[in-house]
Length: 142
Image (cartoon, rainbow, N blue to C red; front, side):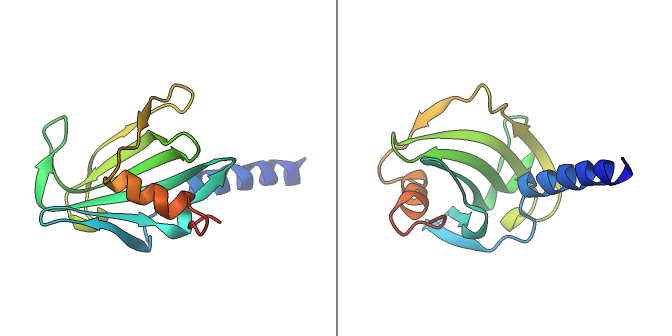
């Protein structure tokens, strides 16, 4: 009985770690502009049927404000990209007071996955660049 309890605890901890924000991510640049740079973490791209889960980091050297009014210089976004129908769902977002997802998390928002809102992937955007990286024949997740 005790070994079963330990197995359940180990499974729960492993599951939480798999979904946790990638603290030591290897960020690959997607798109760079004068005031903003987008990255994604190739190592954490997870294929699920014809979709992909991915982390995106937005770096804003000049900073911005969250919807709640807090100052931030970077944000991490967890998305589920539907490769076949060119749509994306935002699952989670975290805002940080320093660049590259460092410093204090000043705000966050998680969207329940059972009630996702799909958005179209528009051409010539960082999401289109992400789709090309993770959904293509040589995508990060296979």
